[in-house]
Every structure is written in C-alpha cells, then in structure tokens.
Image (tube, rainbow over all chains, first blue to last red; front, side):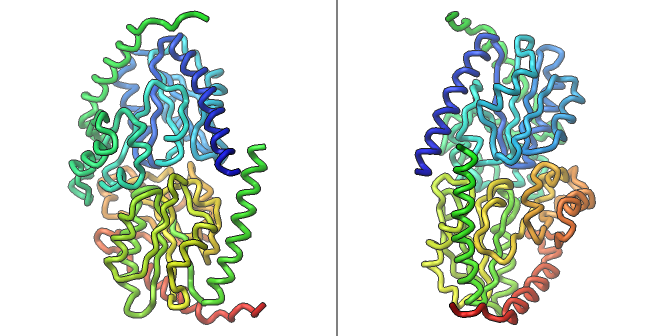
Length: 225
Length: 225
C-alpha cells in the first residue's frame, strides 16, 4: 500500500515536470536544480554566480525552504528576481510547487533559472522538477564518505561542486578520494572545486555555465503544438 | 488524500514507538535518538563518547543509513555492539525498523543505546522511535542560520551539540547567534560546544550523559502488565 502511494506521487510529479520542461524549453531558459545538505553553500554559490553572470545574462531564482524567507532576502540583494517557496514541512520541492512559483517570475525574460532545493541530501534527488540538469554542492566539512552513504544524489546530478576547499587544511577530508567515490557512482559527473568564501575556483564554474547558457540558446525550439 | 496517508503513517509509527519505549523502560536502558545533517559528526561523536564511557557503562548502537555499513564498521572498532539498519532509500528511521534491529541487540545488557539516524535535518524529527530524548548535532560549518530554516528538529531535541568549533576561526558562523536562534525555538535546549576532532568540550557532554544514565537507572520500573 505504502509503496503504491509513493509510486503514484512520483508519477504525478513526473507528469508536471514534463509540463515544466516544455515551458522552459519554449522560453529557451536554462534551468538548474541545485541540491545539497543543509549549509553546504547553495545560497552563497548563487550570490557569487549571479554577480559573475549578471552583466551578460538574466538570472532568476526560485528559493525552496521549509519556512522563512531568509535566503530569498539574501538573493534579492544581488538584484536578481526571486520567488520564495515555503514547503511548510516538506523536505523537498516538487513540480507542482514549481508551477505555482512560476506565476511570480517572468521566465520569458530569463536566460538562466536556478531552483534552490531544500537542504537535504536524500529526498530532493527523487523529484524531477523539469530542469535541464541537477547540480549538487558538497562541503568538504561533510567528509569524503558522503558518496558512499547518499549515492542517489550523486547518481542523478550532472555537476558536483566540491565547496569550502579553503577548509581542507583543517578537515579530515581527502578531496581526491571524495571525487573518486563520486565518479564511481556517476562516471559522467562534471567536477569543480570551489570556495564560495574566497572565490577560488569559481571562474572555471561560471565560464562553464556561460557556455551551457549559450548552448541552450542555440538549441532548436520545440515544435508548436 | 495525501495528508491522511501521512497521518496514518505517523500514527502507526507512534504506536510502535510506545512499544519500544516500554521495552527500553523495562530494561532501564537510556535511549538517545541522534540526528543531524549529513556530515555534522554523528559517528565521530559516538566513537568519542563510547570510548569515554565504556569503562563505566555498557553502550550499544543502532546505525541508520540509506545504504552501506561504513558507519557500523567504524563503531565496531570501539568494541561496542552495533546493528546496522539500511533503509533502502528512506530518509529517516521509523519505530518498525528499530523493532527489527533490536532482535540483533541484547538490550538487557546495555545501560545506554544510541540510535544514529539518517543524516537529514528534516524528516527524522517527525518520527519518534521510543527514545528517552532526541539529541542533534550541528556543525559550525553549516552556518548560524540553520535554526531559522529547519526549526522542527531544534524544537524536538532536548540537547544541541554545536560541533566542529575548531573550524570557527575559518567559518562565517557566529555560534552565539546560532545558539540564540536555537533557544528562541526551544528555550529548554541543553547546549554543548564541542569538537570531535580535537576533543574540546567533550568532557562536559560525557559528564552530563553519565549523570543521565545514572538518573535513568534510579527511575522506578514500569508496572508489570
């Protein structure tokens, strides 16, 4: 019984995710679903990334939190349009929440949309939102064993940002081993080592991201229905 | 529909939690449900705590992970009896899983049982397991805004261990503000600042814990049914 309920929820989510995907595609906006543990640096990454891109591209954000508008307030300081979703206890975003949030965003006027998921290394990985790809951030302070223990998110992500590398001298974390374990789960994972505190490594990430936005804009439009 | 399913799951869990609680109580074993984000230091805390207590008390561990036996292997190095639960994707432990795990532990020969939950700052807080109290660990590397964003776990916990304080000089985290925010949600929260890496602050925690075990053992036995 429990399993069939879960299956129904995931199927309903997938249908709405497809609707979202078609809408994003029609507007040629690149959409990234950003996931991590609590406190791995999602919002700090967005602040840095938006500031690096904003002279060239129009970036918007959907902020997912259980409650509070703390992160949306931080993002709005960058000048980017932002819509807050409060899940009211739920531990992940779903496609239906995204549809509601899109009413508050003019996506026709965006090149890139970040969806910042609820801080959780488990549940968000099960719910597609209609994004182009999933990106995860992992803080070196979390330790190099995380791919072993939370494999699904590593499996579902296209990009892994290894963050807080400025803390490496003070943590028992071997980033080579961390990445090796992640690549074993997902050999196609694209890796960046960054520090959102010092800025180290962020140029490589934002250069790559700019290229993805340009690629997205050159893609043919989907056929009109 | 979805809401009533959730309600049924939580009610069924609560019934089994009561069964667990009566069993723990009959055996006079103190039971702690240990929760945190991934990588906040639950297993390191257990390693340190077991070593500090083991000459005086018999300590056992139930290890909850989505998959892998990595943490149970670490714990077994301390000599403490340990049972691994693999949730197979589920993002939290529930009372039913604990009942199954107890078949592998001789709790009549324990003074203290730690249940290490799945690393997740959201879902575990909703599921009682029959424990005496919940304890959470928060790493300073996660930032001082976590109580604002994940209030339920702070609300449900009796103890908050602020871990990795050796990283404070290198993080943008104000531990006073972090604790102030946590106490606003739960004014009765018992606070310890610790570093499982350097050992700082752990004596205060283990002294307090020893006192709780002694108190538990002096409690009258529940009436026989």
